[in-house]
Length: 534
Image (cartoon, rainbow, N blue to C red):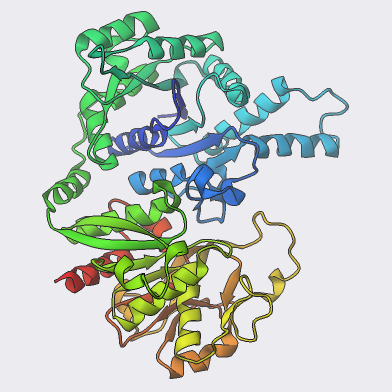
């Protein structure tokens, strides 16, 4: 296959239809046929990246190996396909405009008037084709955030229109729409889909494949009607029904012939249907697991997407332990010494969640204290690890005012502090330790046994660190610092060997857990939570 083919995934009618899951599924199915793929996300908002966005607005911020803060859909791409994405896989309108404005300031345009067309659209097109050119992928899948008709996605749509024209057969548009079921009339309605396609056609894009999101099964008659009204081949009208889990979607899309439809459109041979063996084995195990393991997430954001990667990692780890993971959110804001026992009752293990800022901090410390003194399997991630450290300093080392400089500038016992080189930073965006860093594990430690190797690489997203001045005091009293960065000597992992499972990581292991390669820390944590359940 000589030339890179481009697949554009757009959405209509409403947002949150699952474009990310469909893009990931397309990637998975093409991979299974032996194609080399990558997936990128273009977001129409003006923020430079989602790093400074509130999780209530945007869900979690995902971090790539090279330290780019990105949209949570990149997490789906990596979990489904096992590829590693980079900053080139995530773009916002903000970054596109910044790039064009920087060029204009440098004088690159030689006095031309800078306009949305051609300058912004050319910059979008350049970025669409960048990965294909550089790495010669067979397919580059580009997901466009937002909904067709949004004012902010107009430049992206114009760029796609031009690319489809320039690339001919090598570019395909997969448009995702919604077919609502009207209960009162007892009918499925295709009108919103027709309007959405009309909207797309009005900007000059004819969709090649339609994926209809629906809660009810669509008859062939409905699909024929959509095909006729939207100028799309009947076998390119695919239905995507609600599935018990997102991991069922690739198999469902394969059964519906989504990959076949795309290959036909780009003129690639169809060949045999791939078996998706390991993926189906994972689904079988998942569906067979009837017994439950209960994990409490202690955090401050009570919404599904805020801790998306952690939830998925726990869910995958449950499957590999033949259990169904039942996750309960426990708000750290409301936790007190008086209600913590009741709040954590019935949990086989708890995760103390990452985060930034003051809100809900004391609740996390109370949770860490309770789980440490009651020997409940506990996993602290990033800020969660820092809270375990502060709790230990207060209640074991006896420093009642122990804290992080992030929370209390004046604390005498700053067991968590900011690194020297970070002290003068006033800019919030992208000034943290971000992306993959090396870590050396202490032989004989529990984490060494879990990873079964000495050198690991994990992804970070934080500004504050364990204060090494207190290192020997912690170790003397039973909290071991068992993972270190070889260059900076910063502490990456703490554990209390005397307890069931009490481990904190300064990094975010959830970013590396995928469907076919679950993260060893999560798998081991869930295993101990199950033992605790018994």
